[in-house]
Image (cartoon, rainbow, N blue to C red; front, side, top):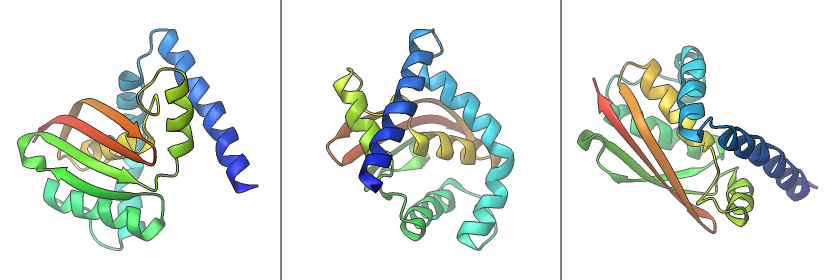
Length: 154
């Protein structure tokens, strides 16, 4: 039943994001706006999930998002680019949205039309005053996604 639920959610949300894309609301723009809306609650979520004060640097933030994924079971992240270079790049496995990425690929996308993890990370970076994400992209290969966020750190 869980697999069918995941597939159904993937189809519904993926098609909503694709419809927005076809209307001219690009997934990156939608993601940036969603991150802005999410930003005010991020600080409280970090305190609740990570059980510590909010991170003050990108290095602390990266460690915390790794911990959140591990503790919640929503995803696993391996950082593959130093965020000090204004690029945050990571390898994501066991993501809860893998079915959406697979479905979107059948429709011509490289991964999910809008990556939920990217939106959450963008919201965190914004709300914690660590910088602004200017662009992001994700690419799926079976159960692995590579997520790249280009940003300006503060």
